[in-house]
Image (cartoon, rainbow over all chains, first blue to last red; front, side, top):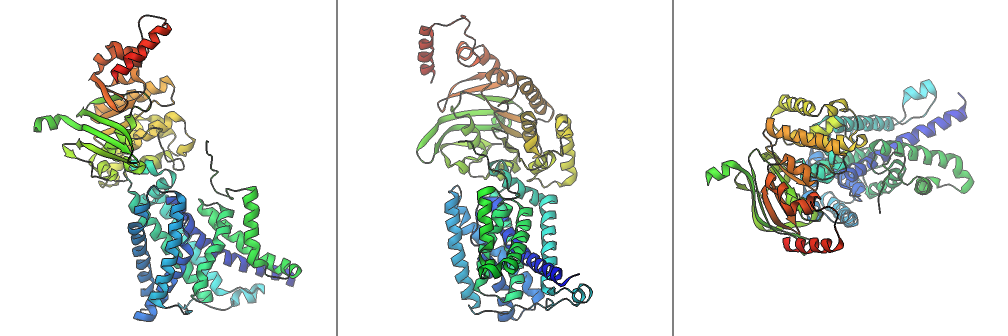
Length: 302
Length: 272
């Protein structure tokens, strides 16, 4: 294998791994958007908040990581319940834009709450995930692959598979899909929307927690974590707002695309391609295929 | 009192419904459904049929509608404060106008969502699924198809079957004939009748197709402008001159002149 091709592969793999992270954040968006038509601006902050909580309970209460995880999950579920009680319930039947504004407010509240509870300094998140390069890949294929990224990809795949089973095979999963299809009809067969919202925000919270932990162990838990949510936006435009596979494929495309573009296009335009590549791609998609790769084409009679 | 309640599964007493705090849609509607009966709620577009059904099933809230006066009793208990899912649990379920199947779910998954509120275990749910398939053999053939890709008739069957999966004692059926070929309408009403006779489900049926509805129902109410303007045994209604003229399209006197049309309008105003 030539050195150049090996380097290209390394770039792609590292892009794929970053893409998995994007996909995880985007997944949280899709879940909530599908079930309630709300574009949840706070999803990125939820990642930050979840990761902060995870680290916080370890620091403040000295819990071991394996106890901190269920504690953080519990906090995210409690948060979902509070959001339903205090926000969503009162905004039933409002325009999507109003709900969207509410989630912007929610983002600020969560950000402040996270700071208030756990402090605003950059935190180290170490749950003993393997660090450094994988020797196996280095020895056998002469490729540099981060162990952490591999672990992240594996965990993300497990999570996605678990979600797929949950959605396809369980009674509640079926109800969630039913609500996504037709609110009114779901209501008429006796599915309680309030319960469904709590469930879906809890699931989105748990996905955010996993994403937060992964990003956190890569680059520390800090405010910039909430900004990856912005990267999830082009992912969603690419994959379609309503499609779970779309979020995953979109994430991978953006991850690989921006890494490859940075490496091979960067030198010609003075670098920093990584920062805008995703948005340019999204813009192109909006022009050509606004529903995204896997999104539902919205047909509206006027 | 107990006797009346035992024979009446649903009674609506003089309800008034206002949308968005300003639009008065129902101006005092009363009706009752006997246990095990099929009652038709007839009237033109905008008469208030759907609003009446939604007021009963408590789906009005989602459309900013409010029952401001009157009371609704199901099985002898006031139900206005209940949520739609509580009502379904108690056995009163609505099949909405326009079918509203879950388009991305398969037919079988659609039927299973109907059993969402049930707590009596998988065996009972499976038994009822089999029961629904026996009434609607077409659904069995298409059990794996996405509901969104099935025909209008199949979707209507799916919607009724889904309601049956909740194990209801009463179904509020809103315009089952909408957009279906006459033969299919007949087929669906035939099944409704069987469900009524064999499974003991009571039906309150909102329909524009007056002639079919009156053939299958035992009693009928005619709504106009948010009021009940006439009610009676289905047989009586279908023989009533005004009903014949206004709703069944049989005038009896052959071709009409313009003067008769004016007369028609005047009489109709009097009715309302």
